[in-house]
Amino acid sequence: MVFVGDEQFWDLVWPDVEGLVIDAVGVVGDPVRIDLHARQPTVACPSCGVTASRAHSTYMRRLTDHPLGGRRVLLRLRVRRFFCDNGLCSRRTMAEQVPSLTARYRRRTTALARMVQAIGLAVGGRAGARLAGNLPVRTSRDVILGGLRRLPDPASAQVRVLGIDEFAFRKGATYGTVLIDVETRRPIDLLPDRTADTVISWLADHPEIEVICRDRCSVFSQAAARAAPDAIQVADRWHLLHSLARAVERTAHQHRVCLRKEAETDQPQEPSDPASLAALIGPPDPSDPPDGQLLARVRQWHSDIHQLRERGWTISRIADRLGRDRKTVRHYLTTDLDQILASARERRPNGHINRFKPYLQHRFRGGATNAAALFREIRERGYRGSRVVVTKYIATLRAGTAAPEPHGRFRAHAGSPPGSCAAPTP
Image 1: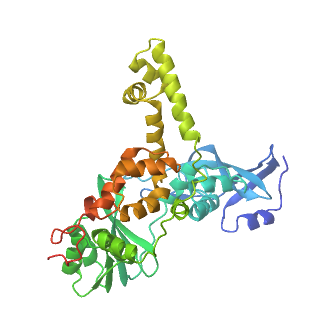
Image 2: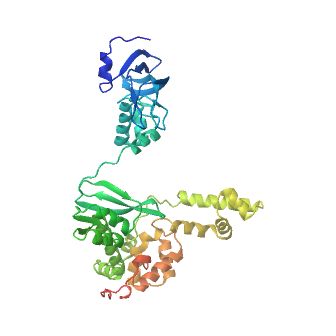
Image 3: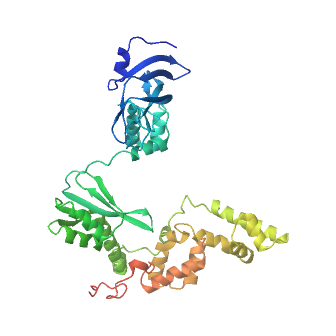
């Protein structure tokens, strides 16, 4: 231990702390340990405010302070307990607190607590814990987040442009409302639900709002109209772009036949000699080799399933052994390997028929409408898919479109038949 007589240095370390006496300073392992005690003669009762001067007992309190010279600092503060002589007070004893240094139930000094809060505000919990280890400050993400939760909410200034939207406390179950200052892009408040009455009560306390930016939810529009009738209601940019994209996509799907016909009429005259017809077939996809990983895996599954079946295993046992569904095992047992391989090829993202579509379209326009004959033609030119895919594609060409019918929200409007360019009836 090194006893300190001159305390001017410690006045620089703790400039805001008064009433401390440094007893000893020493280095124990890596941290610096400082023994000290308070010299204030009286303390105020935290319950009734009466000054107490009669000591009850003393105990040692251990605190962590901000680093000093790259070392952690541990404080051993000798603290006194005092009697509360106010007979009307429910508190009998209280521990003294050093202003600007200690707080009740805290194992860190006020300066270190502010440092941990600043780290949490800057980078968050987990990243803050990693950063604090290099300062060096021992802490965890839970401690950092707990310090952030104890911070008071910042006072909101006058809001001129307000953004309203919903958010999920629990997606699909519980929703609330978030209020944002659009000019500063900072959240102002969180409401516990997304009802009109809650929004109206909040808007009633903020008459200074001039513009309300919201989505097309009727709850928010009704609340804004009732609580802030003079405010201008505008749609936010994201919902405008989202609605525009959906409208364009829906219109394009509704009139896809007309668009396709226009595109086909602009195509140049295609040649009819065999060499030129062969040139219509695109090259194979380099990422889709004839015997790629998918086909090799299918062959391996087929071999394993049949070997286990020959050994007398049941379908359920084979499925458990290979981690496959029983329907898949039964399909591999009852279907020819070539058919399974053809089906596996066609389940790929693009399918092998894509590079043969220009050839099929040209032959179909030339009068070759027999799907079986066209299948044999492209089979001789390298097509490895199934005849079912070719038959379906020829059927779409015969119906006047090569695109599937839309589903769900992309169905044609009830006022106009599919493929018609007539304006929909209101």
